[in-house]
Length: 601
Image 1 (tube, rainbow, N blue to C red):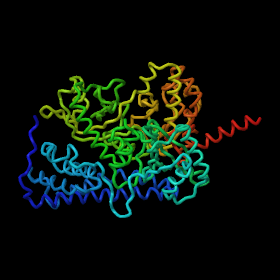
Image 2: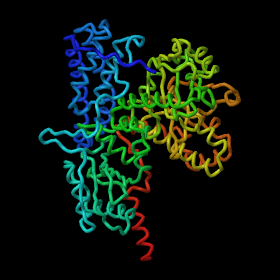
Image 3: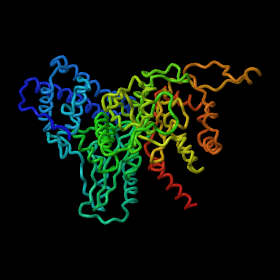
Image 4: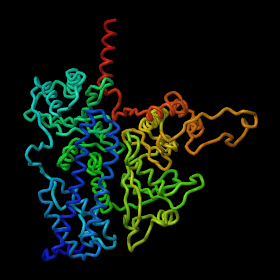
C-alpha cells in the first residue's frame, strides 16, 4: 500500500505563499500571451494574412517553454527554490491549490506547476507529493462570469420551417469582417447537406443546434464546430469557411459525423487557434462530438500540447498499472538512427536516438535529429506527418522490459539509459502513435488495396510538397497507414524544407565511359535531389509500379518539384484540405449542374 501523503500541520513558512503566487503569475502571463495570439487569428484570417497565421502558429508552440524557463529562473533568484525543504514544497503546493479555486484554467496551471517544479528539482528529489500526479481542482461546470464574457457554446432552437434562418444566424453571430461571396447560396448548400442526413424528421422537444462560440482557425481556414440534437440522435458537424479566388468568404463543405471530425482534429495536423477562456469546457464539448478521441489529443489539437502531453503520460501510467505485457523491440525494419520499441497493448511507439550511426548517415548528429523533430512540431503537418511527444527522464519499470530490448538499449543508446533500482530511466525519447508500416501493409494486401495505398502514398507526398516539406527518405517503410486508411510520414531524420533543396535531372552521359559507369560521374551538391532516381528503390513490384505511374509519375520529374519550390518562394501558400474534394460544395454544385444539363440534352 502506498504511504499516505505527509500533510503539513500548518502553513508556517511565509515564503510558500509568495512562491505559489509567483508560480501562478508565470502561468497567467503564459495564458494571456497564448490567448492574445488566438484572438488575433480572426483578424489574420479576415485579412488573408496566411504567412502571419503560419508564423503565429510556430511561435505559439514556443510560448510555454519560455514561460517555464522564466518561472524557474525567478524562483531560483528570489527564493533559492532548489534548496527548499520537502515541507516547504508541500506548503507551496497547498497554497497553489487554494489560489486555483476560482481559476478558469486550473488544469493548465497545475501542469505549469509541474513543469517549473521538475525543472528546478532533480528527479531523485521531487516526489509525487510535490507535483500534480492527479488533478486537484475540478474542471467541471467552469464558466466565465465576467461582464461581457461569452458562453462556451450557443444553443439555437429552430423549427423545421426556420432552419434556414437558424443557420444564417449562426454564421452572422461570428461577425466576420469580410463579405461572403454568396451566403444565401452557401446556406442552401448547408441545408441540403444537413437534410440529407436528417431526412424528413420529426422535431423532438429538445431539437436544437449547439455551436461553440469561437471559430477554430488553422492555415487558410476558419471552422464552425457544433452539433445538431434531436431526441437521442446527434449529428456532430464542422463548417469550413475559406476565401474564394476573388477574396470573398465561402462555406466550403459540411463535415459531419465522428469520423470526419476525427480527421479534422487529427494528430497529424497543425494545432488550431481558438479563443477560449475556459479550455476544459471546449474539450468537454469536443469530446461529446468525438467520444473515442482521448482528452490528451483534444487538448493538443486546440494548441494546448503541453496539457495533452501531461494527460497522455497519466493515461500511460494508468495503462501500465492495468496491463502485464512487456516492452519489446518494435516489429519491422530496424531504423539506422532510432531504436524503436513498443508495448503491444498500448497503441504508441517509443523512439530513442542512437549514440552512433552507420556510414550511410555520415554527418548526422543527435542535435540534427532533434532539430528535425522540432521542425515537424512547429510546421504545418497537413495531415501527413505524425505529431510526436517528447519526454525527458522517463522512469519505466525494469521488470516490464524484455531482456533483448534492454540489451539493445544499452548497446545502441547507452548514454541515454540508466538503471535506477527497479526502474529503467531513459533520459530522452519521442512517443508517436503506432501505425502499420506501409511496406508491411502491402505485403498482405490485395492488388486493389495496394493500388489505393499507392494513390494515397503519392497524395501524401504531394501534400507534403505543398507544405514546403521534402521527406528525404521516401521508402515505404517510413510511411504508416492509419485506421482511416490515410498515409502518414513518420521518419524525420532526413526531412528538409522543399525550398532549401535543388531538384535536378540526371545529366545525359557525354561518352560511353560515363554511360557504362557504375558510379555517379556527375557533380552532386549537398542539397541536390534527382527525382528520377526514386524509381529503382520504389517501383520493383509491377502492381506498385503500374499504380504509381498511372497516378503519380510526375513525382519522378524534377520539374514538378522545382515548380512547387518556385511557387512557394514567390509567396504562394497552397490549400491542403482535411476532407475529400467530393465534400466541397462547389464540386457538388458542378455535379448537379452536369446532371441537369444531361437531362435537358
